[in-house]
Image (cartoon, rainbow over all chains, first blue to last red; front, side):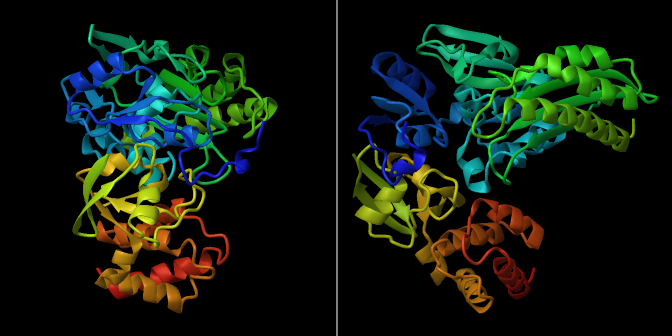
Length: 299
Length: 153
């Protein structure tokens, strides 16, 4: 295989058609009727893949400007985010900052400012990289994804959305319309920590934690990790094992148990062994940080 | 396909191929050479332009997407009041060596200032996506401090 530096990345080295539908319905119709079409939003992953010839497309359907996909709204029991909302818009959203601080922390850590201005939350999920920054927070928030096609609508819990590296349950003709995130009445401490080489590198490993505690004992814990398995994963075994423990104990047990729930691989960014060791520390750190934030909120 | 957009405040109509990026169209069709091709994959910040006021890597934007939008490029920003302050400060502080990354830094710093950012740490975060391979960042941050002094609050 050629090393990536063998490519001139000035141009996109393939010919395709480009469609910018006026509404979601038109987008869905195009997706059904145009052979070899792919949906594009920010293009921060897709255009790179096109330039490196990792994929071939016959047509792009650009959904990034569709108003129907560009909203953040707060309902009684959930926050709903349209799939074409950019990562930077999430960072700056007052609703997200108040109700979903964990998602905001992860969004802030994604790429550079320039990338965050293009990249969308829907694109981050549908690209289905094991390293997707918005995935671990959405996993611990128990988010639900609304998928639409000309045939109708279905809702999929995020834990069932990812089926493998770069693979999701989206069927032909389907578009991710929105992400619904339940808003709990409980107050949680939160923490998203990721390990990477440079300030906007892709994660070698990442972890998201939501924590509730009373009198120093953990009463609710939710943990998810990225870049350490074929898909972003929820670590339910860790969660079960630390509820009821004192924080010091919980952090220690979490770091012991996490190795049973991940299956990292060797790749350009890290070795599997390193990821395994690093995940132990990351989980322990994240549990501590979430706990400290909980104390600061004053519960 | 034909696209229409506002380039540095001027209505512009240009023919583009669907597979051309904004970077290709600006440099080759519209001869805006202040926009630089660096990595081509959105990691270096050299090709940063403002798309509807927000800094984006023009190498990742399919040109057809900017139909109906506003694009602002470094050469235009350099002519503005604020742009002149940025350029002068960078020159005085030796924040430029080969100069290839400079247009990208100019656009990003300008965008941060334009949205009211007034402290060094915030601007430092804002320019994390602009890579410089020769001066290092010490002089660039010195320039940022000078810019902030000159711009005031």
